[in-house]
Length: 118
Image (cartoon, rainbow, N blue to C red; front, side, top):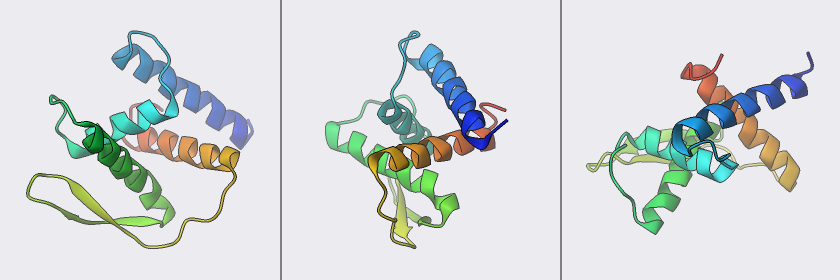
């Protein structure tokens, strides 16, 4: 199976599992999945967040997702439990489609590591 086909199948598996668990079967988009990863990484699952905090959660998720690629590293966790990342390398310029593929690949790898999918 080609790498692209495997990514596509795994991505669909992530979307299906998360959508059934968190969206009553409505399909979650990539932003919603990134938000869920941010909440997971913060570890404060049963609370509500303000709009700016939701953006911060998405930032946490993106940093976490791109850490294995060498773009970020965890710097510290503040007193409120929020992780802070430091940029290690500048992100390359990517077209929108390339950005989407990179993020989907990073999300799939995240859920493979956490054994949410196999």
